[in-house]
Image 1: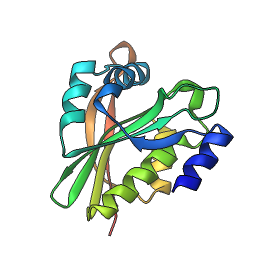
Image 2 (image 1 turned 30 degrees about the vertical axis):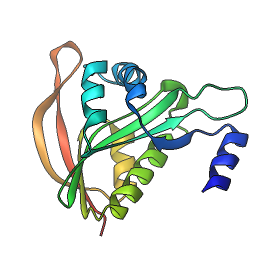
Image 3 (image 1 turned 90 degrees about the vertical axis):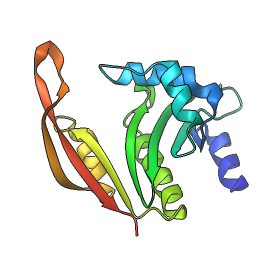
Image 4 (image 1 turned 30 degrees about the horizontal axis):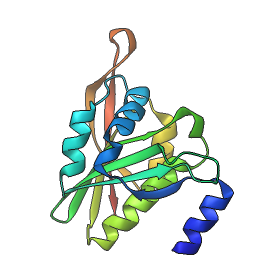
Length: 166
């Protein structure tokens, strides 16, 4: 593991780690920049303190960069199931596979925790995310019409998706 972290550090690729309470403000900023309705720092603090919520962050790495998060995924565990609460990647890091890296790391950790099923909701209009989730083994198991508020009053539906981890 140390060699992987060192390799990422030297290559300047983000390093994936567990979030801490001190990340709440940075995660709130990332979330607000990614969604129509962002969550506050206080909301993030409460979720980061919850032992049933796993939060994996991607931090900049390299000799001349900050350790500020550039992406994260937050997942709530309940018995042998889990649900992705949110995932966000900074605009400057989108399209580089970071969302996939975050999801795969979360799925590995959930598997190690003996979680058998992972659920998520995604806007039916978010085609890049839908493609990613399908590639990760998620399948549509339901829909919620008009679930997400859209621009200028237009609402979009949510796809409910599930991946079997075991």
